[in-house]
Image 1 (cartoon, one colour):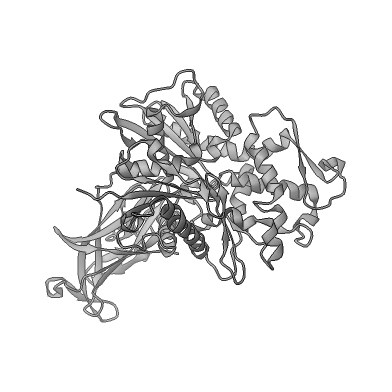
Image 2 (cartoon, rainbow, N blue to C red):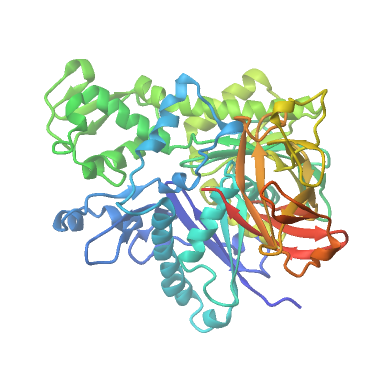
Length: 593
């Protein structure tokens, strides 16, 4: 019988981070405890994903990073670093998720403005923040809750990551978490779960408990076998969408992905950035002068941004036509820009201008998911809106208006406490996994250098193989394709031919990917990118059994044919190397940076 574990979900978010936990034998949403009390961050459901470095002292993190009285007493302490999580995704949501439309251009530009401390990489600062979170969790939260048993209780840590993130970003998250101390105890384990999949698990549990705050139709739909639903997880930095078809309802839900998951960097933090851009236009050049407008006066945690956050949260549920925000710096009256007595007049039209580019982009993502499902000949039974930004009244109302105008029969449903949907759903998913298969979000392949075919290839792009014949340079053999169904027990198989020598008996080959609709033939195509390199030690192989030849440098090389098998989970990937029916072993994988 498997030993009981403590299941701990970490929602490491762009703007806020949270923790939830329960024991592995607990089954209901009410059994999952969400941390709401923090030693140095007060009482709050989540803590800001912010860190401030104080010379000679431990870094300040979360809400305490912006404590004004301490900041005034500490030299060079006004710099608060936030939104750094977005920089873990080195590809920036490229390919399938890129949106270069001018209406949301500021969304794509603001990542360049995320600040990092001198000499620290995104993984470094993420590690520093997560180490403080880990120390709080283990030394205070869990120590207080389990004083007698914590040291002998194995913990399974579940980190959630955006579905739009590639394997490099997933690996960066895992690396930062483990460097921060997660899994540093011998019995502890670790896994990654995609945020929208966790959200879907929360939705299923919430439906069972009828735990919803808003439903756009009079009757709450019941999901039946064959129904398809869309989950829109709107957070602070990223928005992920995923759709599932219900394969079974009894004795428990079983799902399969109905369309390729999509998403974009268009969360609520981009509305904050747009607000600062609006201030820049209204204030003029002085706004960029840090001697006048100090970063601490306009950063998250400042009175200015706290006031704007209250306005942002209430937008869509109040009848206000105008709001007033006190400015932190003395500014001359400017009737044209709505500045009077050092207050900024802020109209509903201006607020809409900040929200609409982000909201419209989210609606387009929902629309694309629905079209993909309809093109497969299936109707959509429901749309679930979750996540911190998912609680926005304006976003919810805008989505309902679009649905009513385009596909009126689909209910839009907002679960209660959707800000904690990811944390709770991640635990549910680990205890009771329901997703049987997923859709590949890109093509996967290895360089193979096809044999020359005069009807298809340019002879000038060939070389003579030491094992005979002309082969084409830079071609790719794709083993998994965008949109393919894939279970966690399904192997994506790649036949790979390597040339090894007696001095370096290692297989190494580069894994490529593409999000293009049609997989390109050549790895030099601009739509192809390298994910990383697979390495495997094959020194136990009897080289005398292999075909051999001399290469162009006069070195004796051996032809080594193997199969690389890849398995993809919710937010993780693993590899193994096979020769015939014999497994040579697991493969080490080095991600491109």
